[in-house]
Amino acid sequence: MTTDTGLSPDTVSRPRRTTPILGVIAVVVAVVALLLFLTRSQAPGDASSEAGFARDMGVHHAQAVEMSFVVRDKSTDGQIRTLAYDIITTQSTQRGIFMGWLQQWGLDQASLLPPMTWMAGHGGHGGADAATTGSMPGMASDEEMKRLKSAAPGKDAEVLFLQLMIRHHEGGVDMAEGLLKLSGRAEVRSLAQHIVDGQMAEIKQMRELLTDRGAQPLPSILRR
Image (tube, rainbow, N blue to C red):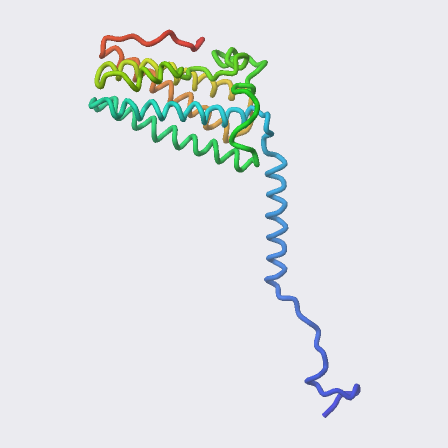
C-alpha cells in the first residue's frame, strides 16, 4: 500500500523527537557556566587584602611548621611534643586552605608585591609597621633559626622554641586581626578569627611552659 505521495509508510519521514534529557543537560551546563563566571568575577583580586593575607600567612605558617619539627626532634617532654604536633597539623591544614583559595580565585600562589603590602596604609599592631618594611611580624630571623637548629636537645631547645613561637604566634594574630579590619569576605574572616582565638590560647599555654622552665618570653610585639 502506498500513500498519496506514492511512498510507502516505511519511507515517509517522521518528525524527529528531542530527547528531554538533552534539554536538561543544556540547562545544567548553562547554569554551571554562569556560576563559574559569577564566582570568578566576584573573586578577590591579585592586590586584595584577602590574596595578600593568604599568601603571607601561608609563608608565616610554613616557618612555624618548620620550627615545630625541629623542637619535636629535640625534646622528649610530652607537653612540648604535643604542642609541636598540634602546630604542625593545624597550620599545615590552614596553609592548604590558603593555597586552595588562591587557586579557586584564579590567582598565583606567589606575587611580585612585597610581603604585607595588603596592610599598607591601615592601622594595626606590628602589621602596620611590617607593611612599611616588607617583613611579616613575628618571623624568626635566619640567625634565630640557626640557633634553634643547633640548640642542645632538651631544655635549651625547648626554651628557645617557646620564646620564638610566642613571638611568631603574636605576629600571626596581628596579621589575622589586620585582615578582620579589611575584609568582608565570610570564609576568610572565619578562618582569620579562628587563627586569633587558637593562637592566643597557645600563647597562654607557651607562657606557662616557659615559666615552668624558669624562663621569660621575648618582648611582646602585640599592642593590646
